[in-house]
Length: 121
View 1 (cartoon, rainbow, N blue to C red):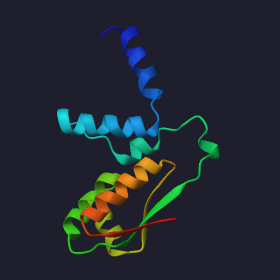
View 2 (view 1 turned 90 degrees about the vertical axis):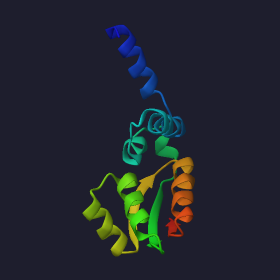
View 3 (view 1 turned 45 degrees about the horizontal axis):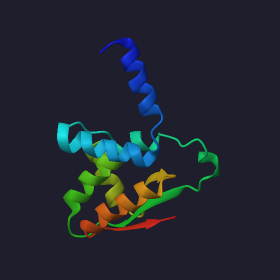
View 4 (view 1 turned 135 degrees about the vertical axis):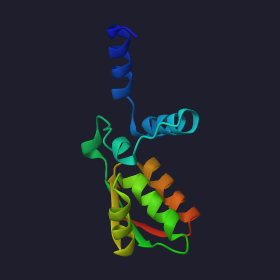
């Protein structure tokens, strides 16, 4: 790729909102085995972010699928496995703060599938 094409690609990526970045991360993961952390997606800011409310996702109960919950915490927070397990064992634990309702809803659904309990504040 030429520099001009790379610069154009960078401008397009910077212009993504959180929802678009989240969808892109799924395409990269599912079709190309490239993982982008929730933390990275969460750093993508909308122009009017200062006006948006923030949401904290708090793990209340890990449930029966503790290993899968630890792996999900690791993916969401970009922490290592040991730190992720400490968060799970130390409930209630704040996992992530975001301004995106889309990210909140998706993360809540992932924990719900694992029969874990999360709270949004």
